[in-house]
Length: 286
Image 1 (spheres, rainbow, N blue to C red):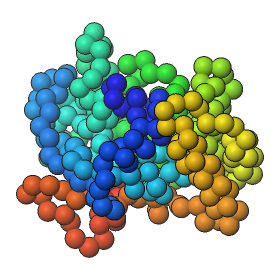
Image 2: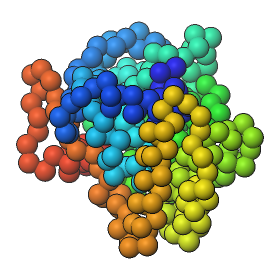
Image 3: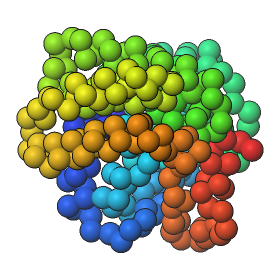
Image 4: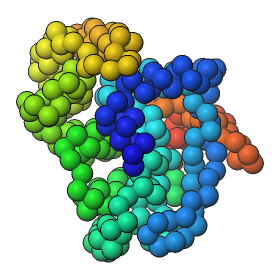
């Protein structure tokens, strides 16, 4: 939990840039590897996909126009226990307060039912996200967490052509982002939160408000931090690019926001032909 919060809920952009510096990998070198993980709820031993390699190119995938980033764009990052169906993101699965275990077990009984499965990555993202949402509610997450959760939910449902469900998730994200932007607690994050809000406006069909929001974001300084100069350059370039793409009608659609299919280590061969389509289909349960 702590690692995921640091990277994606508190210092997403600065740490991703740090990853760029630390991992000098060739383009599109994302590599998956199987990891064996014991479920903290029921004790079942599971085989999940973890990440063995990645690079700074991840920062520039089309999902940046939704302000959704690695690892949450990869459906393999949402782990589901094959026995009790406890579901959480890769960085959260084993990291939650022990005193919440009983409450999580109860929440699982009330969560949407997932049919039995052989490989967790074949369970549709919509089903996994619904269970994860119930679990995270029990863990008492704040609006900053939920704004990003619903951005990610909208991304995956959009990729799976569940347009109305994706829109509702994005509207939920937008409502929370509006509160965050208007409050004092996250004043230092206002610039990137406004870009996320603009993204939700665009992907729910309100380009006029999206452009207005991006214009405001463009006037703001970058939050203070070790990577502020590099971060500011990225955000400023993204704002400028986003505004031009909205005006030209060329913002990537959900269909064109799917990540490239990663390599898989060990005995699991990389699937051939139409890898981006295979990736989406596996996540969408088709």
